[in-house]
Image 1 (cartoon, one colour):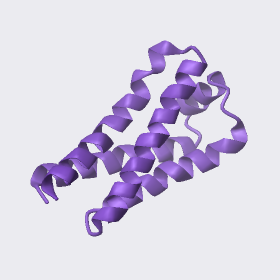
Image 2 (cartoon, rainbow, N blue to C red):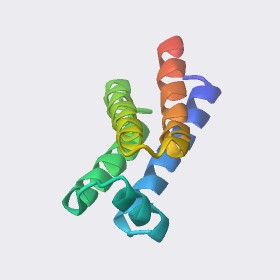
Image 3 (cartoon, rainbow, N blue to C red):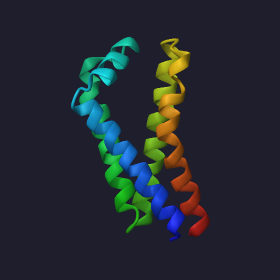
Length: 116
């Protein structure tokens, strides 16, 4: 494992973990956005849990690479779904936000593949 892979994975896990925390703690800026996108309130705990599990999986993947790959793929799919949700809601100016969270996850997967 390279230093770059380690650092990028830690950043990706921290960002996914922060995103999960913001959702699960009902941060006003997250709640408002989800309401604007018409994401059902009943989904919010599950979405937060999915991001938290992805963050933990990325960290576990440093010891067990297959877990990190599964977590990374899951997070990429999650944030891809977030892009679709934002586009469906016609809030095109918000498309970059999920991409910012997805970018380090993608980088972690690429660096992991190059190292392994």
